[in-house]
Length: 219
Image (cartoon, rainbow, N blue to C red):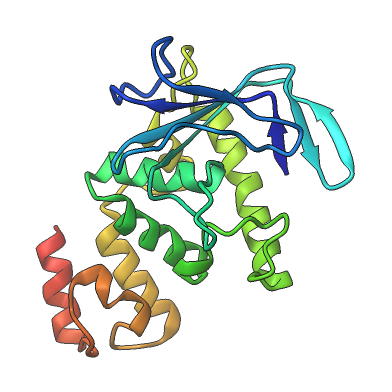
């Protein structure tokens, strides 16, 4: 699904709201928007007001409860298109709550969803890179995230990031949780290729002993 009539802005002063002096764009009937060149490291916000239009498959509906999505300048899909949606909002929530960069927060989000990091930001509406299962996973996750976003919005429509994560049952350091959950759920005693870069291990397996050392460093 996507939204028509949302206000998208570059958050130049990083205060989590769209101010009057900041570059803005209104999404069209395809959910598309145009912004000036976005410098690396800037945050992008999409405020979806009551009365805007939600396009979902062949259905149109009016938004009856405002939403706010977040992303960063490097939150792009495989075609270089900037994505701002419920999934990128979850990534930014982890980035801000745990003081890590966007790429690391993206890795953790991908692991928690058990989907490849390179597929996480693909548009589940039309991306040919996604399998039917992957599309369904991202779509279902987005629906859950939407409910949590609605519950965690403040009166000024900014998102309480830690409250958003708490609604997902996440209150601890996600680095340690992600490493342990990933290996335990996979029945492995080493870190797979997909998480080498996450822990800066290089192109080699990490033994259980190394994993324990990493987890200790993250406490």
